[in-house]
Image 1 (cartoon, each protein chain N blue to C red):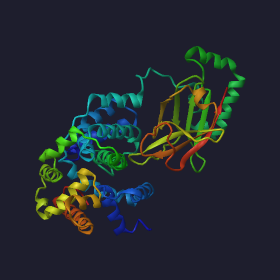
Image 2 (tube, helix red, strand yellow):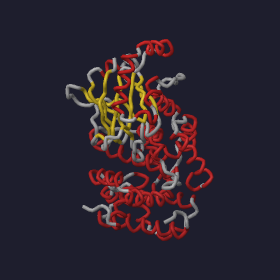
Image 3 (tube, chains in turn yellow, cyan):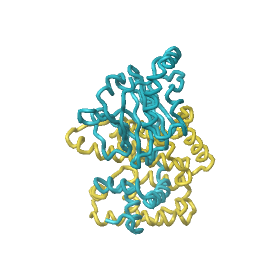
Image 4 (cartoon, one colour):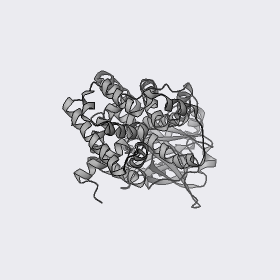
Length: 196
Length: 241
């Protein structure tokens, strides 16, 4: 991930600066370097390739028109990009919920992903911490806290949906997310991974 | 509700960033986010923490059609080398002064110097026929838009940067004279200048248009859509000839 690698992050910030000046070649570079990762995130939330690709396309239109608003002093470039993509994916997921309630659709990709245990949200959570070398933070979080956070972050679920999925009371789920993210933040700050 | 109490802000920023804030509460917080730097900072902090979680997501290669579709939507057909239109040179920089005066000046120049127009015609076709000048809430000239009468390109020049929050776009709308609903024209760049491809020739699109306006939208809007919020910029759209 770019934000974990300062040199790559600097290069990406420089490219976004070029995009702000309407440099098409720089725009393509940003796309080539980040689209796999960003599409993976959108797909995790939407669980459908076509919808995830729509989100990615819209997100990159925003990148083209909005690169001038990117401020490297406030966010790492990958943080900025992830934020755009996740917000769009979450909006799309929620706007599509009423639509899906009336149309039953069997999606092969959706079936496959559900059957693949490596794509389970809690596994993604564990992999993330291993990849950023902060697996020590795992121990501080209860399994239920990790699960609740993972369902919110990777799947875009809201508290009531998480409660339904895990079969837990709403208040308990809210506390899991709150306390779990508190612990995660404290641990990341202690490990010097994300600055306060 | 005071969103900016530190504890409440931290809770909202956390829920917004991880995604559990939803519905009207999410939209309201997005408005707070646009208006208050403290909210943006609180969200920024949670984004950094949650970025760690993004590291484990499984990458997925986009189809080739995604990039070509993106190029098509953004740039249309490959852009031919394009000279700055005559009025841009005329009106650019400090010479602009009061911008409405600038538009009038262009009309005057056109009336008094037809030969000059003729000269331009020989070089690069007809000069702009439709010109719009958009000002911000304080009346400061912000965007100059122009198009040739039968052209399908609208040239947009920013006279000062437009503040567009991350993940949003500045959407240009045309407001018909007869009071019928505004229709979307395209997305304006945040600074500098650019062109917007028009769905129809300018004459057809702008003939009955009295004003142009810009709203901030989550994404470029489709035909038939309505502005989601108030206009941040607006101004007259005039036909020069």
